[in-house]
Length: 98
Image (cartoon, rainbow, N blue to C red; front, side, top):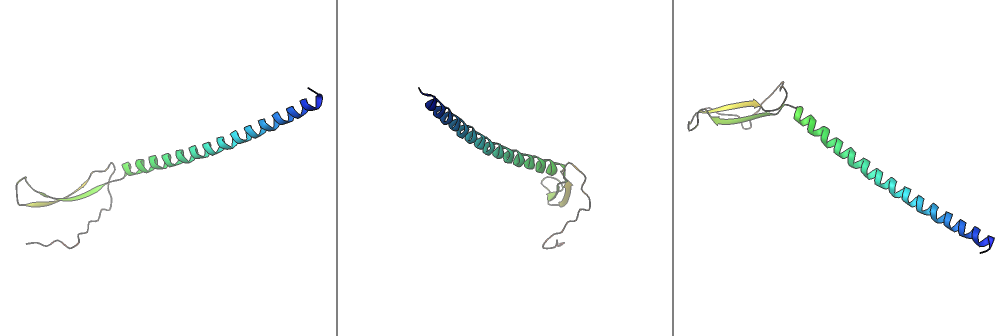
């Protein structure tokens, strides 16, 4: 092989290596960005779940006072993890007594 053909082969190999490494770097960047977005979504869901667990959860129910009784009571309870404050309950349509 002549000196010129060795130089051409060296240039071709160098260009091929440059193209390969650039393509690999591009796809690594794409993959890393996707991973970063997935991690951000997972963190947001975790934070939302933690906030929801730490909030009060007030329920209102009408139950028989004693099982089998026709006397009903309005039960208001907080089944959440934290104290419920300034709780307001509205009924639509308004309750009627008999």
